[in-house]
Length: 242
Image (cartoon, rainbow, N blue to C red; front, top):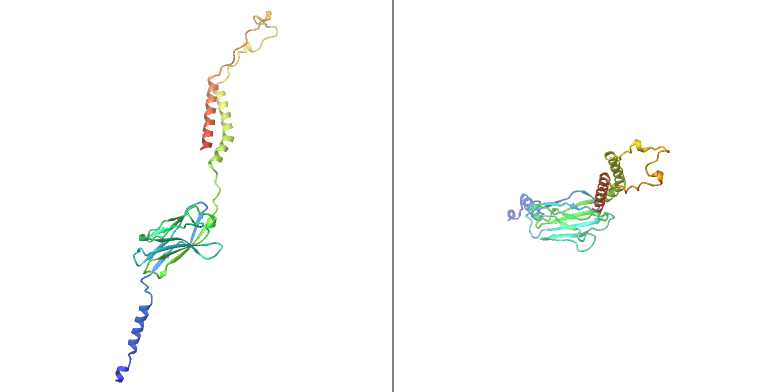
């Protein structure tokens, strides 16, 4: 009778270990979520908030993804995006109409895109993934987004105006000089260029003056310069309109 009441210490240790291992969460059933620590973007760009996860269980319809945002100025995080079998983008607030789902649960992707980033979007973004029964491990990951003003760039219209006011006059002068070189004016005959005061032409002695010369006709060189000028002016105006 006394022998039956005695307890084996080794048996007690085994029973205790079994109890602890049964009650403790399994280290095999765990999930791990990963995001880049920092992201940088310029104002107006579309930035991808990357989030990947690994799970020991295959993603099912019970898997959920939540994205929350905490402003740079501080304050509690606010959930603005939810995924559960389908995406639920924000219907109000600063992210309304600017969030696009880029995830693929079968490939371990839970990323989203932020369209038209602004300076107000600076802050900390948290990606949370739940895939029952994998609820332990590291289901959350944080990334800090920094949006900076976009560097000023020269617009095409400014370049067109600059070309119109600087290059156009230079081109016109160049065309005129080329035209004069290609089409020189006829020089007057030196014998007729100078007349002695005592020289009298026929008819002048009787007070009769020769008929006035006809209006000067437009030469081919003048037409060439006019065509080149109009073509250059038309191209400049068209480039400014575009």
